[in-house]
Image 1: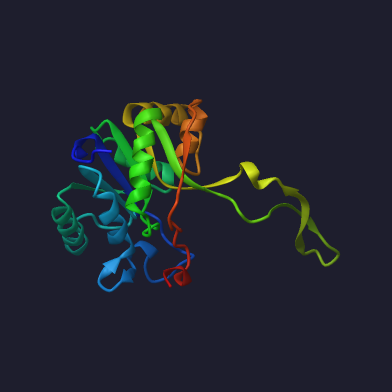
Image 2: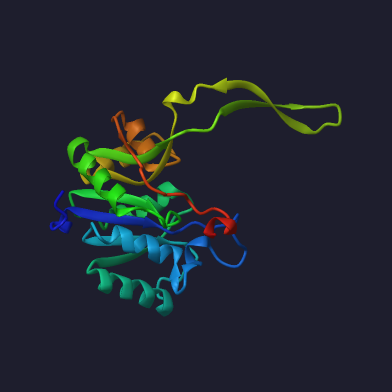
Length: 234
């Protein structure tokens, strides 16, 4: 696949989460994962290899005029030879993506959680190759653990307990990851459809599903875990 034509692709990097489960001090995307490199910067460096522009959605309480943040991200953009747009994120993932869409003028877009800094460029290339063919594709891994459907009930002490209702067949279950890549015009139509129908998706491909479009799964071959707790940095 030829990545000499980066003008075809724009990256959306979602870094607007509050990270409450991670730390009270600051969101996880701003923590260092390596000496001098934050989680956000590591994710940025991977996505920048295949796009002409990166739009970063920051926490809405972040001052977009903050010189420190602007300098850090501008330096990264210059090093990677990509253009940079900073936007305020929304109160939900979908709102953050929506805030980014107006700045996209490329044929394709890919949306990545900045909290997945271990992303492999090989997986990204495989994803974009399939997205060019089918217009909508995501990275995912097949589930390997035994999956239980649980039910809740109250016991005599008025405490809520969880019990197993049944074991679910995992052979058709996949764990969705990011990036997720789409033809831009198609995705914008799906977002408009979601807005009209008050649909709120938990990931970007669910917006396409709601629109009635079939999304292809591309198996993620390399480490791509999402950082949720501080221990995930180790």
